[in-house]
Image (cartoon, rainbow, N blue to C red; front, side, top):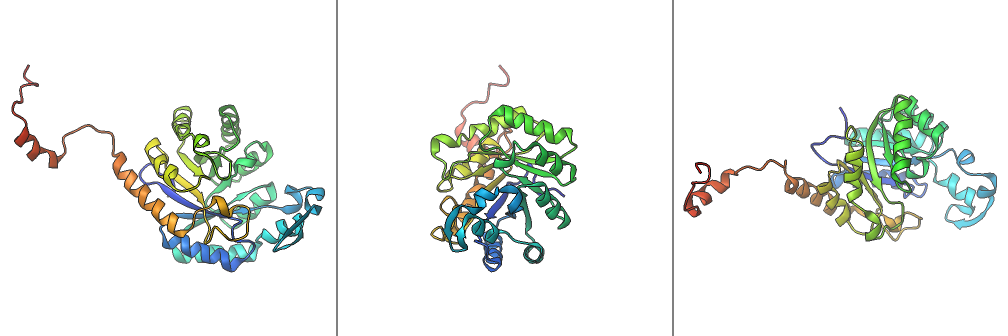
Length: 289
């Protein structure tokens, strides 16, 4: 059964690298995401020496994990043992987990863990080799479209589908952190729905606050993904563009209300309108004229 449907918006907590390399913090974040009503949690997986050059890894960068960029990148990565603990907790709680692979070896790593989805990050959308490898894995794909124009999105979708891949959800996204109101362009959801009528369209947000994420439902988003943290003041490059558990809970409540407000589009007389109609309408001669 697909997690992504047209009936109910799927809410994904993007834990990403906000765990700062701590499996205990990652597990605590999963519990918090489940507690406030998220449907899934997402991580990121990289083969560090493939994704980054030796020069990039050697660059000085002081962090809680070391003195170089390489210390940071390696310290943020989880291995099989950590992901098995993540999988076990998610199975216990009944929440879905998956990750964004940034290279082909990471695709294979995640497939071996039997993930239900692979998420292609906006930064990877133009990596044809990665798209094809992920498509041929047989695992349904989720695609973010930040830093893309429509031609790039069309090329990515065509590449994946030509390789036999299934796109479970295509996410409208703006890759600024945080995104300004004039950069969010929620109407882009409608554009993607019109261009790809066979695909489900979601929204991956990096804005401050939660209003755009809730409003995305009115444009037809079937999923909302937001970066998630336990404390926006924690160390980490993605913390400031994340929302905490209280905001996530409020956002989910807003999304569920927005789903009701959107309705089904059928224009009809509601049952609760009929007594008012009988009381207020003086004449009913329109149909007979």
